Amino acid sequence: MHTFRVDDGIAHVVLDDGKANVLNPALCAAVRGGIEAAVEERAGALVVHGRERMFSGGIDLGLVRESDPATRATALQEVAHTMLALWTAPLPTVAAVTGHAIAGGAILAMACDRRIGTEGAFKVGINETRLRMVFPTWALVIAQAGIRREAWGATILEGDLVDPAAAVTQGILDEVVAADDHAARVAEVAAGLAEIPTRAYGGNKALLRSAEAARAGALVAAEMGGGFASDQIGT
Image (cartoon, rainbow, N blue to C red):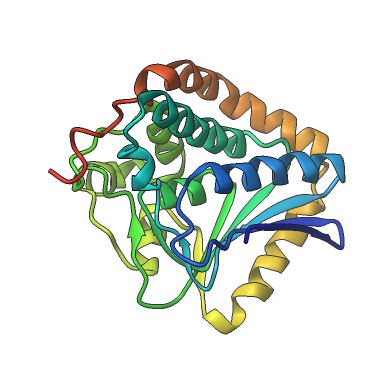
């Protein structure tokens, strides 16, 4: 069950569907609701947590294979708009990457301002190319903002999944810490970000990202329509 709480002025969305934390309407509702609640509660920062050993496995392939085009399009567009909403959230955001972060799961992490991974035998990366998928603009905009430019080819085009340490080198993650230290480090980073004046932080984030977010958002309906990747997944 996805949950929300506020502790000591820090908002937390904990994503836990008991499985792979796939990007679907339930997860999107939790993230969007968490952003709105964090703003309403005047939280100093928002932390998005995964479940143990799994941050997110990416877009729910059941949505891609949904037989009704209207249902498929609505759900997939909600995923896109949710990721853009998180990327432009008007307060500091931290991804507590507790394990695997694959494809859309890595985009979910990179939609947060800071990404803190966990040491372990986890896979991180955006492997859409390997899945015979072409990136929609919203995902590419978020990825290019996070990934170091010199790593765009290997990370975005080649689509290899890597371990957390290599994900730091690429820019998908900012840092990786031992599992026993992960919660404390996430709390430390979130507390530090919460000390920054939120109005100024949100305003400057908007200056950095709003134009690209608007451009990507305008293309969501065309790129995430009912046929998105349905002729590619599984082939």
